[in-house]
Length: 348
Image 1 (cartoon, rainbow, N blue to C red):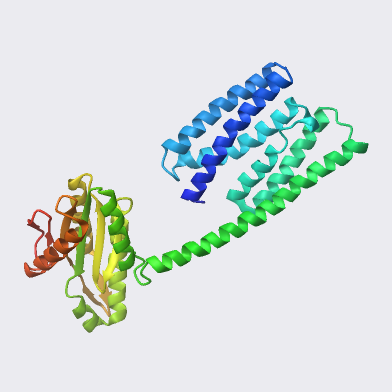
Image 2: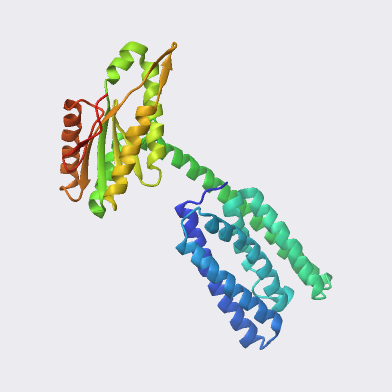
């Protein structure tokens, strides 16, 4: 299943705007230039208005990659195809000035299905256009045949060229995204790295949105490495980080701050929700069991928290969370030292 990106959303927004423009052009051409008026065009107009309004709402009012968003954006290709052929039929067939809309449809399809999509779209549009001309009584002889062949060839050319350009752009963007991920993420844990943490702190400090900043440290991690080896230690670290990512999905980000120390940024519009999320993480990590050579063991974490912007600037919150982390360790480890200085949890 293809996931939509912000760039795809921008493309969809632009295409949606073009649909409204082309609808106005088609209405003006049909009613004022051709001076025609029949139920077929009115039906197409009403259908287009209803669909485009619903699509506009889905585009701007629903979450990216929601089922409704994906359905409307993908179905829009079918709508464009039918509407285009209908418009060409009603506005003169081979003489229709709206024929170039086909090129935009091909590029739209190529955005989602790349080279094969662009080629397939050009072929389907060519076949549909041929059927329209047959229904309009096109002779396919002499100059008309040459015009038809040129139109068909241009559709194929746009499909080939558009598919190649989009495929190359997508390949380059995928490579760039992978390089960016490599620069921003920790290879071992797949969490964001210290650099990303500092960049995100700056972004949050500018936005002033409520945030719970958490610094966490694996208790007695050195003893795990010394007793079971660094490969086991790496495995423990990976499992803990994966669990944290799963628990905070959609509510924040997790980072490998350094060594066995982790950082978490939780959205704190509702402080109680942020607290519950951290408590779930603490409880789930306590339940993890590791086995090496028939010997099982568990690990815990200590946590220090700070609340931004309630407690101070973001830099001060980082310092406060760090101090509370060490306080949690001094109080017996496996503790959460909250932003209100209260300690919760119990040593085990």
